[in-house]
Length: 88
Image 1 (cartoon, rainbow, N blue to C red):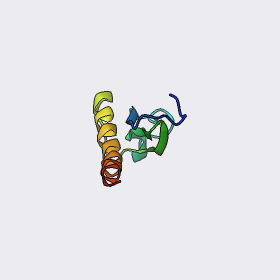
Image 2 (spheres, helix red, strand yellow):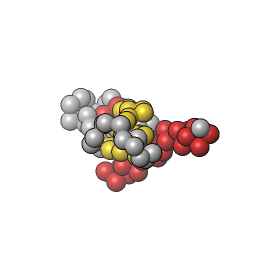
Image 3 (cartoon, helix red, strand yellow):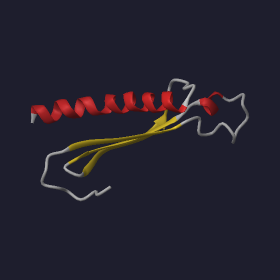
Image 4 (cartoon, helix red, strand yellow):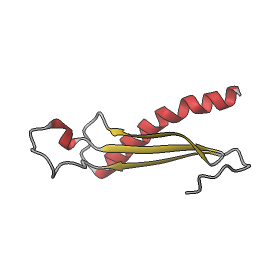
């Protein structure tokens, strides 16, 4: 990914999820073992605006489900930025 400013006014979002990333490292009694991790970066003109990495609040039962949850979490970050750009 190129993080140099560009002349085009493109708004891009990159999202990824780690399905139950810590399930093998800690005792199963801990709730955070089953939570997936979401990573998201939103760029405007090639420069990152927010860069987010956090645990998901829902328990995903599959890799696909954790990816969809990550997409929805990232979209919640993206919508206010879209409205701000339209205002400007």
